[in-house]
Length: 72
Image (cartoon, rainbow, N blue to C red):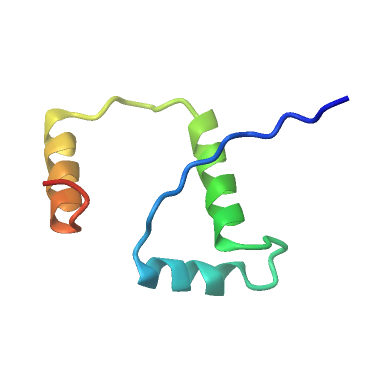
């Protein structure tokens, strides 16, 4: 009997965010920031979006991602 192993991807988060998450999960039972982020994102993906992004929301998101250096 074989056990299916889920594929994973690597994402980058700012160091200050990682440090804040490390402090937040201390003593919580999560073994790592990776485990915590994976848990949170999985829960978020289970919830249907209440409303699609408006054009203004998308514009603000793109500007924020650009300012953080994630997109050109």
